[in-house]
Image (cartoon, rainbow, N blue to C red; front, side, top):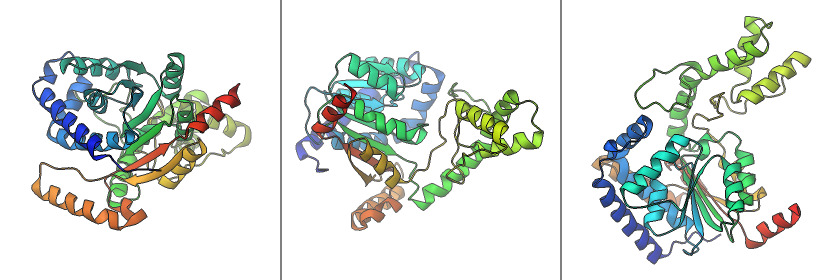
Amino acid sequence: MNTTIDPRLSAEVDAAVKRLSDKLSKVDVQSLPLSDYNKRYVRQLVSSLPGHFQCYAHLLKLALAAGMDHSYVIDYGAGWGGLALLAAELGVPVIYDDIYDVSCRDAGMIAAAVGLEFAHVVCGDIDDLVAYTVAHELSCAAMVSYDVLEHIYDVPHYLQTLSDIPGARFRVVLASGANQHNPRIRRRLMVHHRMRETMGKEHQWGHKERDALRSYRDIRSEMIAEQAPHLSAAEIEVLAKLTRGLMRDDISAAVDEYLKRGSISYQPDHPTNTCDPNTGNWAEHLMDTGWLCKHLAAAGFEATVLPGYWVASPSPLRSIVGQTLNAVMPLLGRHALTLAPYYILKGERPDHALANRSAGRV
């Protein structure tokens, strides 16, 4: 699979970054009638926005390496819309997708404030997105996402469903900061997992209302007690621990199994990974990149994993360290992920793969 980036495309994307940055610098985002959640999110991004745009630019260059035509680029899990805005500034027709209706509304307002618009807005998950693109007969060139893959509940289903998105030689470029191959990142995120599993959070201004404040284990305990109130406190505690990484329906199925058999077949496949039991939103899901490649390949894509690169930092020392690591990584081959700040799951679907899959549904 070709990962070479055309210098002309690279220059066009870099120019779009500068134009969009200039536009955003003239907009008082905090004065827009946005949700508190996105006001807070964008405010926190301000100091690191140049670095984020460097990352977005790199992902778009990979996604559009086959050339820009009139096909759509999807920003999946687009949030406030930064990556989608960059694609729109580049002149690419964009499908903005996010599961959170609040962000779908807010991103449209931010786009309007900088004189841009998204060709289509889909508020839903991967199944909703596929249904929309098929119903509207949209030919898609690529899907790009940043820090989304590690929050998706059923990753195998998500990757398999990507094969149903219409478009010739459809590409996916999915970046995740939950890089378990980098020891420093892995240690930090495992601490984060334990905190979300066992500790609640204070409600603060800008909290995302669909996210739980209570500890995930407490929420699971409550769900189990509601379904099977006759169980002892000790049984509920054990089941709450054993069902780490499941959301409500799967927890309910596990409880049913326990009531019938006295045990459950499910076992967490990682010592700390955990998710919000109400939504299935993983707390920075650490996943093996080989496992991800296998599932993407099974969906009909030529799949590979690339290391992400360190971007410029407001700190001169951090920038120097990042540049040094960037210079070393190409020399390490498959071990480059141990130094990378994020990984990129990249796939390209040959033209015949979609045709074969479509024929199989007839």
